Length: 207
Image (tube, rainbow, N blue to C red; front, side, top):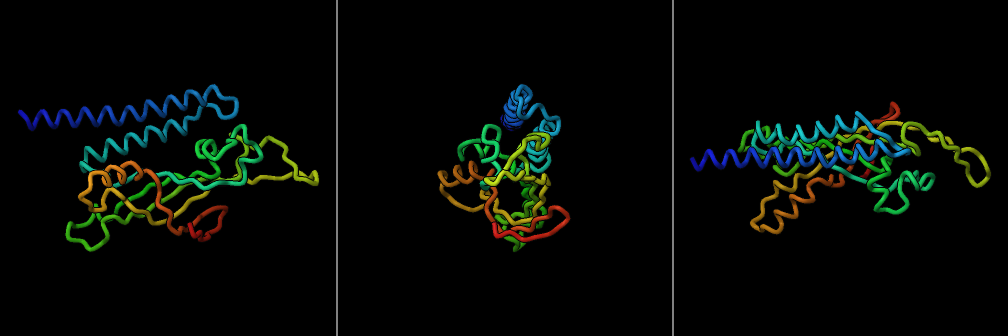
């Protein structure tokens, strides 16, 4: 009876945790729907559903998270051209400037190998997705000029990345404090050199 009660409690926690995250992100999408700058996006909603489904599904199938969704940000040069939409301060730009955001699917290979594997258990392989050249939501319909009055053209394009990452939750430590910290910051992609695929070209980036 105790074991059945523990299983039921874990299932309850799984459902509440998974769907509370979906509810939070859905609320943001609804607010975007009333924003003149962005508007509602079915693509974003699909991504929200995928994220919650990925977390819940892995817990059910493997009882652990072998694949993590992660986030990284680096300042872009585009926010200055439309700060009201892309953010005026660094803290706003982290949330609003999609040009500087990259979303990662971070996979732990050792979780799919035999327990005695010598492959580092903390080392992940990450696939990233980002975009560049956006000063507007659906299109760049603003006219931007430089100091000489010449119109600046912005080329909108997608970016895909291949990189390494670290699953901090798989680093062995006896410290409960460190375990908590590692678990909280594990949503952030650890900087590593990467290969970028964009505009039909392949190039390398240090970070």
